[in-house]
Length: 528
Image (cartoon, rainbow, N blue to C red; front, side, top):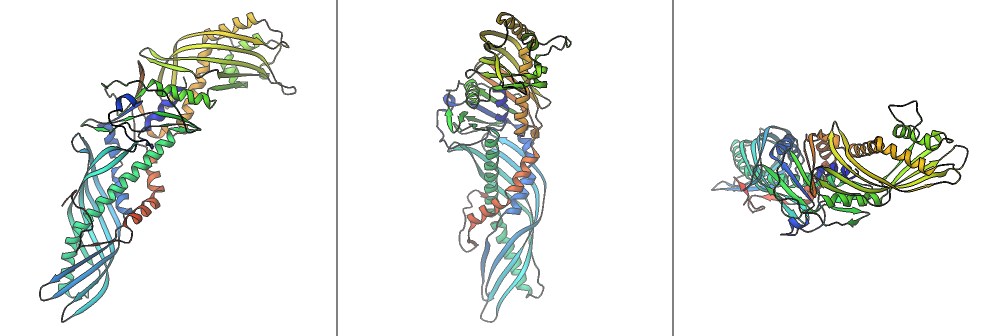
């Protein structure tokens, strides 16, 4: 029952950790396989426009220096300072997957206006000019990107392997009209030509930085999503992700931690042949879920207390509301409002994934306490049970649903307080009747509520997931779903990372400047 509550957080499994990749060991050490289809990539593409605009707006451009010598006329030098983007728009974008090139993103008609200050000097035997003026650059370009994924110290590293900017328009407008016309024309022509090359290099570099910032932000969010209390699941990569024309797939260890100590169970081998049925697909090994159960047991999460209305809801018979419920029949002399029932796992439960369903095996202690308002509380009844139940699991309408298809249970221990007049044989018969008549299903309904509340706490509802499939097979479970990209996640990134982006770019750029007389960058990956 409880492991299914830990399955949904795995919907953000592209999280990283500090373990090196181990070439050749992916099959043996993989506990989780994650696959995004091309349809999922199209969903992410809906947000590409905002990310690209944020890239341009937050890019920090260094000073740009240049000098042009003119035969018999002298030389013109200039420095462009405080280059910033004012207005920007993106017409459309497309995404595709390629086995050879990786993730391909094509962005059409990126229009931007740059503003800044130009200091220039003209020196000749006849004339010297040293001046400063404002300028504006109007640019319009298409952007084509190729992104590759690799395993880097256990995390997913994103590289912009190809970046091409095709400028449909790039013009420089000087704001002062009093300059000598031929100098204005020279500056306009030469600087526009230089900017065409420099902006390509700088913008592609900023796209690379922004991509990794966004990747790191997503990984941090995934890490938070996979953690609750002292229990966490790190998903170190076991090899480089695979990109085909139909999907992107990655392999993860699925190590579970409790208080930063690993709860290790060697994962079963997930079948090599896998078929995706939804936009997002997960294959999770059985030991990963059992490790989560073990950690949950250590943190005392596998327990439940029932009092008042909750107690009545579980133990009253819906068909015979006027009759005494099972607790009232066992404890005739105790008011129902004075009773509290505690359920707790005696040992870590275990699960088996089979085609017929998820089989849960466990031992449970059930304690009935009398808690009167005016007197000290005491334990009236204690019993231990072994349970084996097969559960059919589903997720719909933002809720987890668990439906037992078969139950096997036996009462191993039954003790009562000598102060209570109680026939243990009668009590055992009443309790057996309760569990046989659906009592276990009522208790499972609280497990459903707990799991749904945990998923809501982690923000799963923002993904608007649909058509979800939870399909157990021998040794592993398949989780497949369609979804919509959560706008809140992107807005959080753009809102909270503005200062991070600025400081990141400033740190990278430092006080350096572009000098067109030298070589300030490697243009080997640029198509000019």
